[in-house]
Image (cartoon, rainbow, N blue to C red; front, side, top):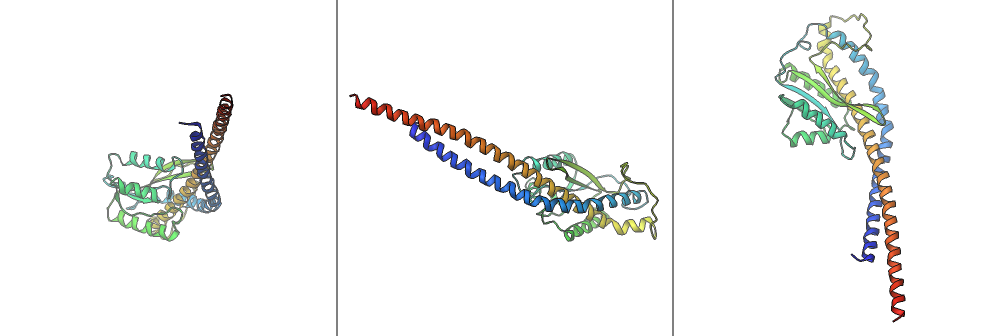
Length: 277
């Protein structure tokens, strides 16, 4: 390869990496701009989720079809991941946990988010239902999901309901979680205050009426956790990609300058050599 050709390739490579860097920077800014809205949505959900968790921890002690344990011949897994890629290992972490959970089990899935829905469809998972978007997942959609799941559970289409999601912790971290929603189990979380609560007309009636709302609230809360987790993961991934691109450009620019200097030196040497003949 000649030196002039080398400088031309290096210059083209610098332009290409610089263009990619602009894209990664733009995606980082978009994720950052959405982060505030996602965190507001999450902070609004968490107090409700804690209150529901406390109430249903009490109701789990009563006798009901929703508290009776039965053999888990078929389980429903609500799995939530991202709408898009370019978020580091975020989606892969959820998919890995899905594969581990479904190994040796008869699992029906309810994927929420485009990436996890596509994975379930392409890998032969039976879909109970699905939703394409975590960002646009609404309270109405959550309420409909809760009602359909309760109907399926009462019809014994499945014997247990689990939810797989990512819990948002900080801008730098999130954790994949798996929780059992049905049948209800007593929660021994020490943060739950054990107080006497009066249920009218009785616990079983309240439980039967409230389970769809309970599922709806839990699903919406987990979707909110996942949306914040996805944005923070994408923000970190794009920030890292932007820094790597900048470092690559600096390295390519140095090589370009050396190659250009070499080309100039070669031309001068040829001129000097030619003038002496």
